[in-house]
Image (cartoon, rainbow, N blue to C red):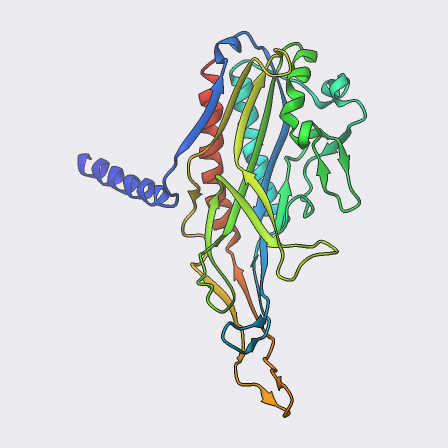
Length: 350
């Protein structure tokens, strides 16, 4: 009997070890102040709960041609690169978000906090003329190349929605935390919470520039810390090779009370480094490089010399097939570790 127990213990340790190897180093960090003032809080309003999944990325690079020092002319060079995931459905990513939200609510209620409804929050002056949004439906409009989800049955408010479906949260410089002191006070000093996560799979690599346009990326599925989405600009008027840069940061945040224009208490939980998710997406490196053609000799017509370098372009495309169950399990494991850690770190202060 003892041997059997030892064998079972050994097998369980192997399972635990294999699961733990799925994630990279977990390095949480936080910024806090005034948490001693939040101990009497009894209510909480969840102002935002979104999980953003990168499923596609494209980039451009352009090197202008022109005169060469010492004589000659070089042509233009343009590189394009695109990479995307297949095998995922809206249901796959939605179930991750729904599970995270259910666990979040369970921890909040277990602490004895009352969850303020969106209907009640909507009656405050803070959300006057705001638009109520409904969760449970994925959006492709919020961030370039990303699917944005909010929990099924969850409701929240935004300042505006444009014709493409992109929302603006409101607040000074579109930062909603500027609204929270006023909102907290109007809801009886309720805690105001935000959860915003970003799951990325494309990582830019330093590409040797040289004489040409050069883009280089690799796959790395991860829960992002503080970084940026870099993707081809969709502006109506843009320069050749222009990309847009959108800053992102995975955070679990809690604000409470009002003191002047700010909150009396705050807990902002984030990551000190990306939380990598292994064994889900195949390791892939992709590069697009176009070298500037140079004409240093030209042709003489007897009066002047004509140079005719070639303009060159390069395009690389890659589609990566994903096993949906592996993706859901891996991403959920990473996101849950992150969210649970910061929720419990904050709740222990109450």
